[in-house]
Image 1 (cartoon, rainbow, N blue to C red):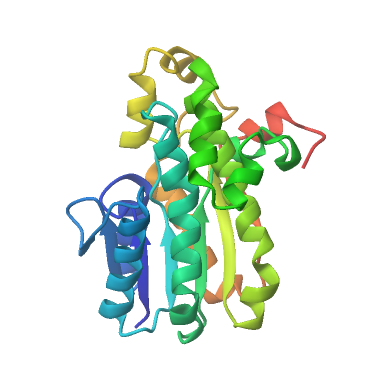
Image 2: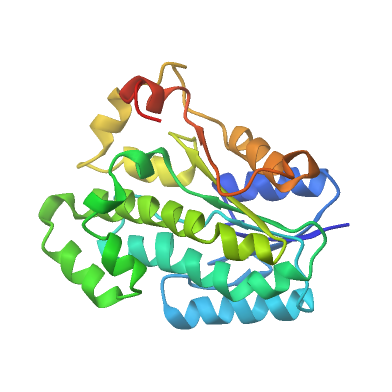
Length: 257
């Protein structure tokens, strides 16, 4: 029986993934702000360190899998907290738990990115250099000067950078015997999406944009892709991003992939 840690396990994609993994016979160690085995605030350096320490303690330093679902949408304020959770919270747990994963059985990690990650190129990402440098103050300063678009920049910029962060780790992680991939959902029926729909700045555009498959995804549909990537059938999949968006990316960028 594998032991898999999941952030954002209390709701949405994280909760659906936890349920899918448990149904498949895995043990799950949930991390969230509340209603989880480990409660931690991934928006702060101390919270990230506490989460890593608690996971290592609860797992006795041996993890078979890691799924990082915790994230904030573009409506959250301040915008710097979006980047803090979506990027810094992810890379802190990836790096902090690699040793535990390397001791696991056929270990694998999946990071939940977003289809928004492909909406800008990394070399055009205003947050990219500061995120990679770990400079949270500089990220906050850039977002403070972004005006009304700060939330969307924080969201798309952090998701773009975290996808790059995963890809940059492929050689080092393969040397430790650990696979790592990303899943990039489109609109999914989650509390995060509901928060966007209720927001005066982003709600209308979100409601009016319809995917070629004219509905929003269910959390379990994203969970099924994560479950596959964590399993033995995906044993040669490493450093890849899987878009699960009902055709949004193909519609927007048919010649770019």
